[in-house]
Picture 1 (tube, helix red, strand yellow):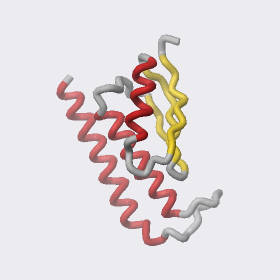
Picture 2: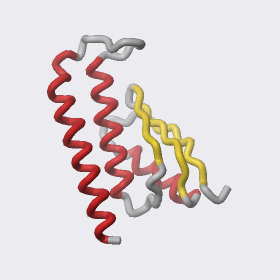
Picture 3: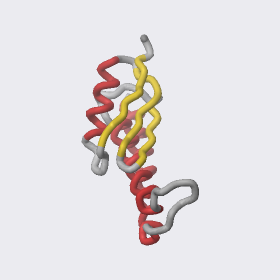
Length: 115
């Protein structure tokens, strides 16, 4: 169990490092609009880094017992989908995400596996 937590934490840190490095390289072009939307490249990178931080925090959280949570971020609003074992895990996931820097709100569409 300890090895699993160590692996999850290391994976989360690796993902976050990659996203932040990518953000540092592209953030200066914040006025460029990516194809298909009104979101600037800077906003897109910020949302990507929020997503990485949310995933890392969810993996590291002792109060959330699921690896089947999908995270999407748009303009600081985080959408959670997937399944968790209990309603308590669903509620805990929301609390973890709300504490991540840059998150403006959380939309939780997590389903409890036993429902």
